[in-house]
Image (cartoon, rainbow, N blue to C red; front, side, top):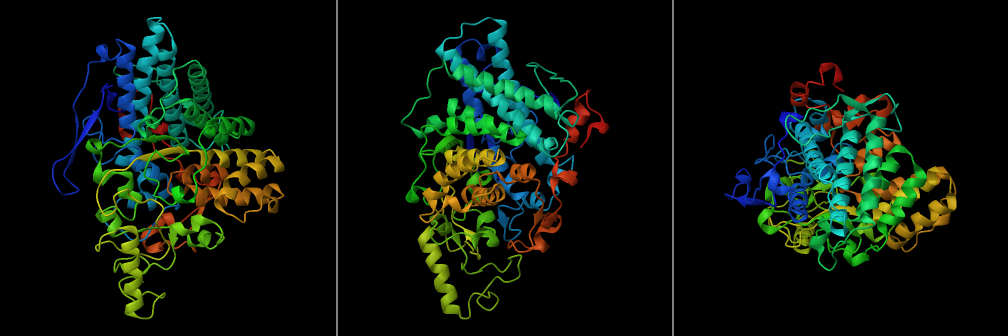
Length: 543
């Protein structure tokens, strides 16, 4: 595979800040262990899994083929909302995600983002292969402890393949999965990691389904994930495995499986109340977090972190100069009885003279204000309320959903991968697509009714009405959490930013795009480095 990926089995990675500038960052492996020793015992296999938990958000410069420019899901979660225009940028700032929002990065085979997305996923696959193969080859005893190890390994592999095929292959519901090229299936555990040619989308999905079912089967006989400390949620458990299964089934239109798996995934993870929902999404300690990265202070990526890319309070140039916006058309549809409306500031003054809409810098250019006193007072109130610094800019329709525990700093915060809210929406959508109107209303009502005191599920009595409302709820509830890209693929919806609040000057090609079924630009280009290194792929295999 890409650059002959070498499995480096580490118990943990230590992130070190070597200077005060955003450019001076490095990743150093501090406790690498040999491949032979890593697989010598269940305890050591758990070290491999712990390395993968860290690798979900780590910079990868210490790994062959890795890069400190990216930090796993820190980067990719917001990116998958940037590409379809869910997480809207207000200005160029220092350029992060600009190539993605302009539809340059994922359409260029030599772009580093494509390479690192591919690299990270296949590293997970190769590492999981090493565990799975060791247990099978040595006929190891599969007790509760080993079942928990295998449950995580199979779940991680299923997750990685799902991420790959939904990026580098045509959408299952809008293409011909039995013939559409997917991604290579990799079962090797040693260099040079040569795989088969690209398997079909269907073959990859078959492998995902096999893996996630095997994961769940192991988890049913496994040691349970510890509770009581949010750090344990970095471990995949049976709920997270069911969540992966629900995502997989939804993306392929296996509606009943999606609905059933979603119900199982959210069991034991009650919805948050208003105070928790508005608290900033900065900790795995929230009741509905099923799976999330526990970012440790000494292992943070600082200026490559998720909150650096999404939070208005993080003290980095990306946030100070580029507050992220909520789609203003969708905002206007949120009822006043829905407390999530409080996470958007439609009248925040446009203080940024570099704002891409050309209305920033003062009350004289901001149409919402006609005098300096009101303009400055509104700014001061926001800064004081949310804890930003006086170097941070504000912008109309900026969000305040993602807030640091310690605002105005570069302190790390957790990264949430899966919440029970998503599972309610998966169930509602799956049942709507099966034309189970009552079932869809009930699932939707449990989520939306918890957020909006006046929500009336009976107002949505047809499949179309339900789907329109479900799509609305996906945006409002999960804005910034990385579901925009796969939603657009599944719903076969294009991009039109005409009334969203995005600037055509900034967005360029990303301002308007045709729907995925007629626009193959939605499919990520295979990294050129992979085509060059993999003897089973040629230029003819490029998307």
